Length: 250
Image (cartoon, helix red, strand yellow):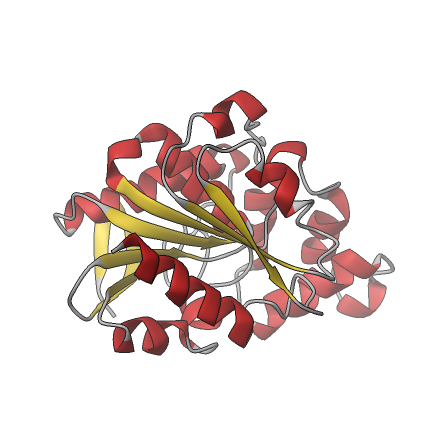
């Protein structure tokens, strides 16, 4: 699997196919395989004639592990994604994020709007602005000696997911401990790129997708029926909606 060096640290990525590039940015505790390859996104987009690029975010997958919260945060991680585009000499791309990857993609659009042809915000609605809850149960769950010791349901769920993905739990905890740089309603209103906001109708993490879309200049909502935050990722309605959205861009 290829990698590139950014400020002395190695970042793993996937780069397959030809055509218009689309950059895939995974969610917290996931990686390029779990979020995008295994659910069929990479094959789907390749068959649609696109060049598919997916990064392992810092602290995740095969990329460099940092153990200080100061080394994380969505703006820093957005810098990694943009550095990958520089490495690949890609001037502009479509961006698709899921959950934390949506936050990272939004910061890419705010930092370098000329690089972003379109945005797909998966698993994140108004929570992009309001936040998605207390991180402490997740941090405690990741650092607990044994999953059986975790009483909080959310903390236990993220610990189980981290174990399933064979993640570095201390690196993930540092990522979750990082300062959350807020995105304001005014920030979101600055984004001009066409945007698809795709959220499961049973997602109790993402926040209201329509409320987010109403703030944006060129956004539409895709409801993913009967899916929660964890299982919406590979849903066929989500996939078909993304293909139609990208097709309409021309």
